Image 1 (cartoon, rainbow, N blue to C red):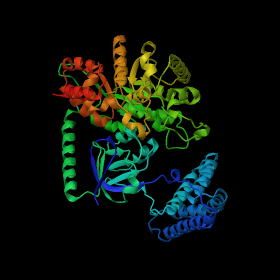
Image 2 (cartoon, rainbow, N blue to C red):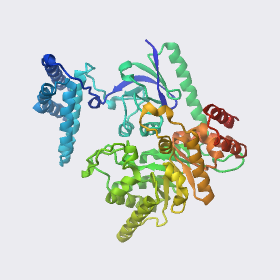
Image 3 (tube, rainbow, N blue to C red):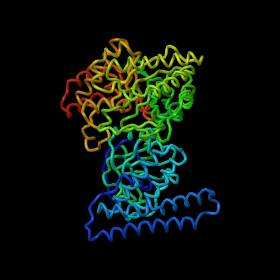
Image 4 (cartoon, helix red, strand yellow):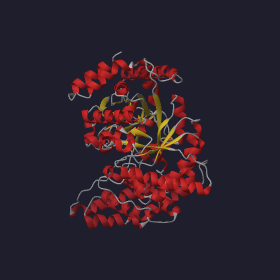
Length: 580
């Protein structure tokens, strides 16, 4: 039966394919009390789940394909040993009896305890067995929940598959980046969460905030995803499917037309040049930058080099990653941001022997430059790696989430120390490396003069600036509807930074999601912005808008919009601004 689910579109376009359900079972175990009279039944339910899981392993072992790698049999044996160990097959029974709780919760408690013990193991090989324990627990948990025994294997995904998940961390999305999905759907998340930003980097139609999607959508069910409208059509009828295939074809034709602008200079109708740079996460993203014809990289998010791993990258590894990007850009500027970890982009809590305590409110806690400055030894490693890469092209260093002069002073001191170290080693670097700061909190926007005196350039990170100005958690879909780039307070702060930077002759860019929103291009141009940085997939559409714009006709209306508080009037003025 065909039906439609509405959510929040996080990347435009249309995808058509079959559902691939993804589960984070260990995070979703419910907790409820069991009457004493039913404890026996609950124990039996747990025992049955363990027995069924054991039978699954036995079946898998008996049906190993002849050409399968020899490690596959050993892999199953390890999982069977883990399952048969009393720590998993017996201790949860004791918890059920002692706590009088449901089997899923007992299993979760025991799994959490085991996983934390693995985190404390120093031996790397043994620590990696944590993943095996987790996979066995997930199989038991799925059986307890009465769900299909099939655990989705992302390695079997293809371009016709649409991943349906409860939630995805940025690390998850990054991991999935190496596979080829047609689309991402999540039950949680907003349009501006870090996960959404990464998902957009895949340039795949994606929708978030689809509550209960996994209970409504079945495995392999046909789906249509309209990322622009935030709509998912489940089991569409033939006519609807044909209509969307036609629209999908038309969108592809539009993309092909835009590709003709690749080598065209971004210049307004009245002859003002505009710099269109790219945001990237990984060195391999440079291919997309070249395809889009970007005039530089305005934001290289280095934190993704630190995720999905058991140890932090050393100086040589970071240097090689940065150098690869710098050399691939052939002299065009590359702005490398020091790692912005600590909010929803975290490395494992005990990675590389460093314990990071859980924070009550990570978005307001020890993140970005605050975290870098509390880890001077690790910060030095990255600074040296960036400096060394600067020898191979035009590199600029960007400090995330500055809020006070002391943070800039301390960063510059750390940079000076890194330069001294490299000089002592006789390793070359650009001694005149430019240093900039990200304006992401209202305090930095309001105290702009503090930073224009100390820094070579500025970059406005509108995703966090909006979050902190409007007090909206980017990762909380319950308040996602309040996220408003056109809020008067947001526009005033953006305009304040642009005008303040221009007045002092400090180059300023905008690298948040606003930069890639074509509806806002003329507004930002009218406010004086001349450098945009966005995902490569958005560059050609923004360039087309720049080529259609006459600055003299948009400046006045853009300034008037700063005085508007009514949302409907703002919408009408934006339509008027964008009318040809």
